[in-house]
Image (tube, rainbow, N blue to C red; front, side):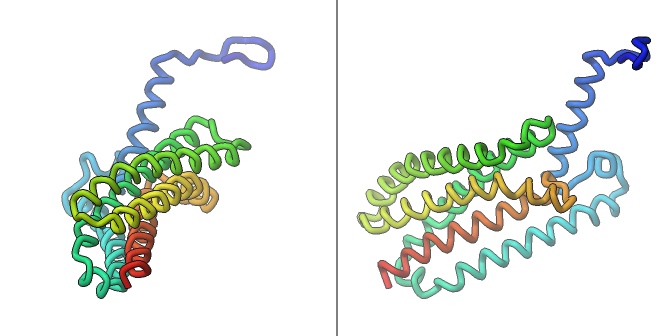
Length: 215
């Protein structure tokens, strides 16, 4: 580092850069679990418990939201028991796909890679989500059809997977940018909101389609 007059003011070594990268990585990792690296590592038990309880409570509220969506289709689930068996697949695949995109975007924001290229990134994630949706829809639909000897339920879960993986990719891209614009740490709040969205969209798509075709 030099002054405007060209005089040496100091130097930044590779060790300094690595330390900063590690600190940012620790912050992002801990924040995604609702923790703080300074307060939680050696904090008193009650303080640590209280901080974690807040995020557990928020997660519980989102879980109730997903459960409420399932409750709307109780009659359909009672009619077709296989739906209850397959529901976790749709939600889990959407959650993982969304988390992958969310982590990628948060990292890109941290290192300054995301700016005017948001449109390109959104388009890329949409296509990637659609392609992954098609790939795993074929796999899961084949397994479900063989398992329950019902081609209709295979088609329904295939469509639900495609819808949920596309939604997960789009939300995983837009959500951290939106949270950042509202001065909310996307690493802290992003995963909780993302999980809720993918659960709700997945259940609505899967159970909604099942209600249409089995109702």
